[in-house]
Image 1 (cartoon, rainbow, N blue to C red):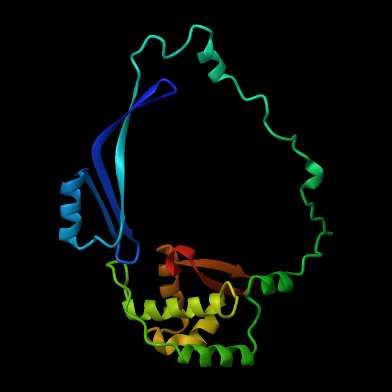
Image 2 (image 1 turned 90 degrees about the horizontal axis):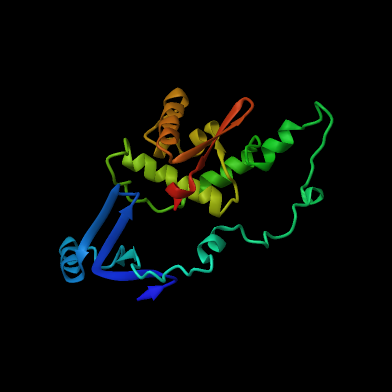
Length: 219
């Protein structure tokens, strides 16, 4: 098959790929279709992953692949239509006097406002009604069961409460018993380790540190 002077040759090979962040598994198998399918079946991965054909592109050796009319030079020219000119007036400008930023309001917008007792009690009730999750799998987890409960808590605040983060103190008050009894410095150090592993995002809010789920981890 030829397209624009380039010959596309199907190699007859396929590539199977499967990746699981939860179990820290990354599988890539390349080879003839029948052989790859046999290995995939043997590994029990038939219902997951993606199989794609592998193609090889090569330049056509035909002398007329590039015409004598200077078509090659035309292909190197920048397109004449680059879209509309930038309009700086459409870029929103935020101006405020020095010292006019209300930190408390901005912190409240991202979900780090000081929780009221009602908020804490409601979250504790909702959290207590959750079914016990399965322990997190993978060598990267120090405490699989505690991490699974924290993941459920983060999923609860995002999907049910519309929040992006919880302060360390609120996590302790709501879920300490499910997080291996961690409190105070021990809890903070554990949350820091999950942040370093890319599972949590860390939000600094003045005297309060907030923790939210990484979308990849929560997904």
